[in-house]
Length: 69
Image (cartoon, rainbow, N blue to C red):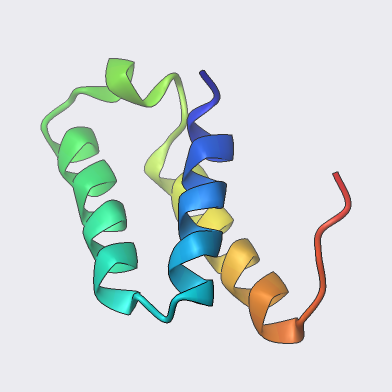
């Protein structure tokens, strides 16, 4: 399972629903796993990767466009 792909879909859903609290909870959950040293649960994705993905999804959603993948 690709963690970043799952995270991207969750973040898109949260942004569409304006569910900022849930979005921050998701990021906090990932950060907690990283801080606890449980990077094995992140499938090799670093916190920097995840934060970059969060910023990318937010900028894409706010611009009204879809990313090309």
